[in-house]
Image (cartoon, rainbow, N blue to C red; front, side):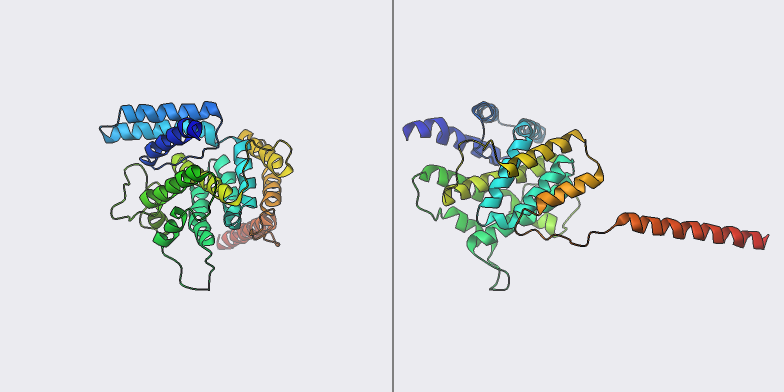
Length: 310
């Protein structure tokens, strides 16, 4: 237990404390090399704290650049989608997470953020056991307090409490903080600001998108501890993981046609239990042909009308 404290609990606590100041949290599911890189950057920030908004923005960019190389990998993303599907509570919104990743790999961070923000509150409501139509929706304060309880007794208590604290702090300080007192100097990624249309400033940068992705990564780790579904390594032979990894790599390479993309994504999305599949997909080509035909007929009628006028 002493080695665990020195090698993981203590340094990861410092990492989470530093990252939270910039609106980030972090999943512990990293290889050792990546862990050391993040640790070194956080130590640099702690040793040389920013003295201006420009310096703080500089550090925010450094955090984002470093974490992008860790977060984006298609195998990592596929693995966390698989885990989201198998865990209680978050599985109800795993289709939100997967759709956000598809947008993410297409550089559509705007859409990715709009998939993930509702899924945060939805997952927390599922965690507390609330269902629509049964009673008044619990307050955000109550939802966060449920995470802070660490309600399952377990041997890995220190990790459990560490993840709980990090999740609650991220939600309190950033996503659900009061917009009247929120720190918007780095981003406008705030649940009320976004979902209530309180402004049109940027809340959908690459950094914002990735901040939400790593929140769910950590939440998945937290739930995995509770539900006893832990992984030391990413499974090698798992069709659900492997098929996603292959598709995500292809998204990054742009080696896809629109029709194939739509077909593949629908196959993957249908694996999520709570995803609503549109059975009668719109045939846009037929509408396009009709619109083109109507346009040509209109042009013909106008031509004939002009001839008569002359």
